[in-house]
Amino acid sequence: MPHKTAKTAAKATGSKATASKVAAKTAARSASHKTASRVPVTKPVVAAKPAAKPVVAPRVEEPKKPLTQRQGFKTNEFVVYPAHGVGQILAIEEQEIAGAKLELFVINFIKDKMTLRVPTAKVANVGMRKLSEPALVKRALETLKGRARVKRTMWSRRAQEYEAKINSGDIVAIAEVVRDLYRSESQPEQSYSERQLYEAALDRLSREIAVVQHVTETEAVKEIESQLAKSPRRGTKAEVEAEAEADGEGDIDGEVDIDGDDAAVADEAA
Image (tube, rainbow, N blue to C red; front, side):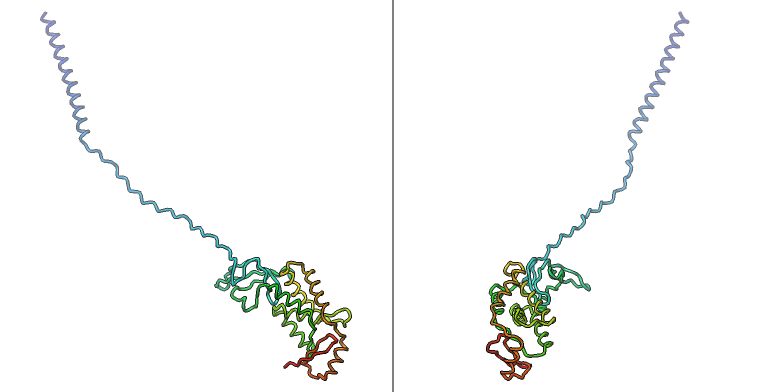
C-alpha cells in the first residue's frame, strides 16, 4: 500500500508539472499575440502619380467654301473678254503669288482650247464684261444692214483701226468691221489680211450672238450673213474710186460708202 501510494503521488506530481508547462506555453503564446497586436503596422508609402495631361484633339480645319461670285460675275457664267471673245467662268480660286493671296477668275475658251486666269480686281481694267443684252444684239444686227464705210487711208492704218474695234469687246463696233469688210460674190476678192480680219470679227460676233440667243454658231453665222445680204447694193472697187474722184476728194482721210449710190464722204482729222 505504501508503495502504491508513492506511485500515485509521483504521477500526480508529474501531471501537475506537465499542466504547468502547458499553462506556461499558452501564456507565452498569448503574450506574444498581444505584443504583436500592439505593434502598429506601417503601410508602404506609395508615390503620388503625376496628373495626366489633358488630351487635346487635333484641330481639324473646316474646308473653305468655294467662291461663287466676285465683282458681279459668278461661276458657270459666260462673259466677254475683249482680247479673246466669249468665255465661260469655270471657277473663282485663291492662289498665293509672291507671298500675297490673289483671287482669280478661271475662264475657259472652248473653241480656242485655252484657259485664262484673270485677277478679280483687274476685270474693269481688262474690260471684261457680261454678255450683251438682246436689245444690243439686235442693234448690232441692224448695223450689218447699213452701208459699208471705208476710209480712204492706207490699208495698214485701217487694219490697225479694225483690230482695235475687234479687241474693244464692243459688239456694235465688231459688227461695223464685219459690215465694212464683207464682200459679196459680185465684188472683188479680198486680200489675205482683209480676209483674216473679217473672219476674226465674224467669229467674235457669231459666238456672242450664239450664246445670247441660245443657238449654234453656224446658225448665228447664217443670221449675220442674211443681214449683210440686206445691205444696199455694193459697187465694184473701180466704181468707188471713180465716184471718189468725181467728188474731188483728194484727202486720204476721207470716208466713202461702198454701195454704188450717192457716195458720201466725211472728212476726219488724222
